[in-house]
Image (tube, rainbow, N blue to C red; front, side):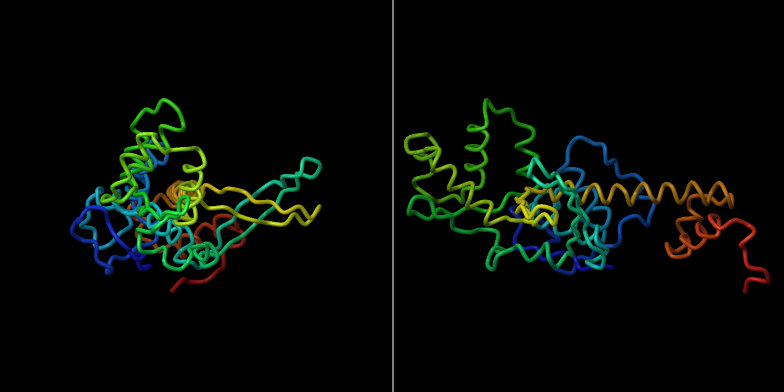
Length: 284
């Protein structure tokens, strides 16, 4: 069991937002096999995974939607790295056209979490814009779901809607600025930079030097998507394990899931080795 990431704040005051929640490993139960990684709504997919793996299991989907996206990503990171004991692997290509070397990078959970600057775990921070500070909060899964369900005329209107959602109420200049009276592209760019600095897990970027040509590469990484892909592979491995053990030993799915992962892996090793390599003697 792994500790659930610290919850700095939840937009709505739902019960259960205490810090005694735990995450069990993903890829161990029949419920994990029911997760549909092909569903089109990523916010709901993340909420479903976290709800499935959180104990005690008394929280509704809405609780996990109301968590900040960065908290949800940290929880996914915990599951995908087995509580921080395994690295996250990613492959990038050098941005230099004449090189395009494949860069294979491994980062620990600690290294990824180190991008969070001190003080950003409060969930609400001031962002300086043209000499004035405005208070913004981090986006939640519910915000993400709401934006995906809306239609915007262009990118500018989408950004304006996001800014309006995350702007902490109480600022008398909010309506004036958002109406377009003082809104400029430079103003929006400063907001964008401030939001990225406040929420680096959501806007994750990686700097790496190419060993072949020495080019410094800075790449934006969809960290949430990367972790979901890793969890999907864990699920497929469990399906494959059940398929092989059921076919070889004729065990049922519940019987196989009742066996510890370590023992399942050993049975798979015996199948790979073949009967000729099976040790003789009575098994005690």
